[in-house]
Each structure stands twice: as C-alpha cells, then as structure tokens.
Length: 333
Image 1: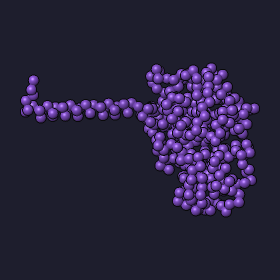
Image 2: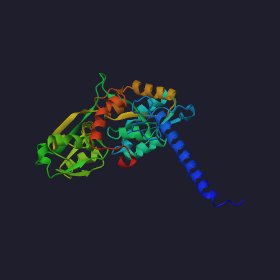
Image 3: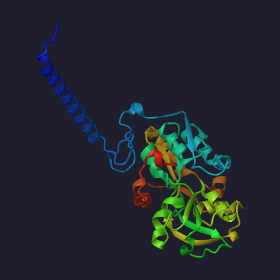
Image 4: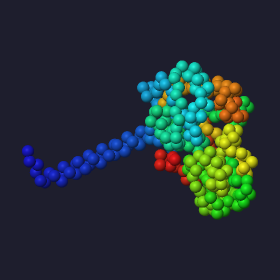
C-alpha cells in the first residue's frame, strides 16, 4: 500500500510525539531507579540506601558472592614477596576461621588493587589511607578494621624529612627545593601536604618542585641518598624501614609532623555473603599478633580494631575535598 504524501507529516509528527513520550518514560524510569538507589559519590554499580557512604550488599541474594577460595591483598609495597611471608600467620588463621583456602595477591599499584576488587577478583584487602575512598567509591570496598593497640588507639602521622646535612631546618627552607611526594592518591605522601603545608606558608608545586617517587620507601631512601631535598612520608612506614635497617635514622632530620590519621583500612567486597562476612570479621578480631611475623613487622600493634568509613575517614575525605579530588579511575594512580 502506498502512503498518501499528505499523511507523511502527520505520521512524522505522531512518530516524533511517540519518541518524545518514550524518552520521557525512559527519563522518568531512570529518575525513579536513581531515587530507589541513592548512591552519593558511589559508582553507578552500587547503592547506599542506609546513608553510611559505603556500598550496600545487593538485595538479590543470587548476587551474593560466596567463593571457596578467598583472595587477600595488602597495599602495594616495595617488596611484595617479603610481605607475603609476613602475612602468612594471618592467612593461616583466616583459613581456619573461614574454612576456605586463602591466597595472598601481591599488587603492584593502588589502581590495580582497586580494579581487582571492582572486577570481583579480590575479596579482602588492606587499602592505604588515601586510596581507601577510591576503593569505597569505585570498587564497593567496605572498611571494617584497622590495626591498633589493646586500648583502641591507632593512627599515623605525616612526617617531613630532609637529609641531616641539608640546609633545610624549617618549612620556609623548602622554597625552591625538589621535594618527593609519593603518588597522587597517597594521603601523607601527597594529599595531606597539599592541604596542610599552605597553613605553614609553603604551597607545593608553587614554592617547591614536586616529583613523584612512587612509594614512601623510595621517598625516604631518596632523601638519604640526597636524590631529593625533602620528602613527606607516613610515620608508620619509615618506622618499619628503620626497624629493618633500610636506612639510618641519624642520616635524616624531621622538620614537620602532623596530627594523626587513620592507617590502612581492612575491607571486604560489598557483595560477599553475610555469613562469610561474619567469619571474615571474626578472623580479624580474634587474631593474636603476639609472637608472629606480622606482630614483629607492625611494632606496637596488638590487634585489629573495628572502625567504620563514615566516621574514621572523615578527615581524609575533608583533605581530599580541599584538594578537589574526584573519585574516578583516571584520578587513581
């Protein structure tokens, strides 16, 4: 049948109205879905109906993960092989409590660690302080524990070191110098200095040249070797380095120290079966550090203590907000 030409404009108009109606329905449906799934800064993969800033467990039980083998990763370090041995006592304990095989996954970067949890290949992880918000928002990580003392104390500080023979004795002396930050997402190695140093009259990238070393270890060793004039680092990292005789504390000078920040967050993937989560938490909170390689490595730590992201990472989120940080994959390095 041939359509009469006079009908074509009316048909086109009807189709146009139909398309607009379909688009309106689609937008309304999308808006309703967003209303039913509030997420704040979380990626579109996740919901936060209870407002605690972390991803909710999926409502559909079919989406709950309950793997026979659990993959655990600690934050990227200079020598992952050493840390695989250090974590072995805890891995054994985790296997006993969860009645699952547990494998240590050595990650090479913060972005690789976050992507591993996002893709479902990583179930339990220790994320560094600064990258923790990225893990929460991009990978659905749920922080639940920190290392601390028996009385519940925890934390570390940002420390700024220079070589003992340098001409840097106070913050003002950083002007015109070459200072090693660790990586863009690191809290004590980059974010905190950018937020806190201006209060001391020094602005990174303006008053001194920022170079990225890649890690706290490299920053500290670079100061000792005089490759860098100074470096902001995490106190807990350099304390462990000194304990392993990786550098001589007499070779460096401390010129600044901040108030305390939370340490590495221990997290589980948001979609793990609740019964498995209970076992994971039981394993962490029942682990005895005394007499283990882990206890020797983290001197002064006596147990894992319970925390929550909304409360304990508030200061970190404030620092990152002050620096204009957006939780996107491109900003995670």
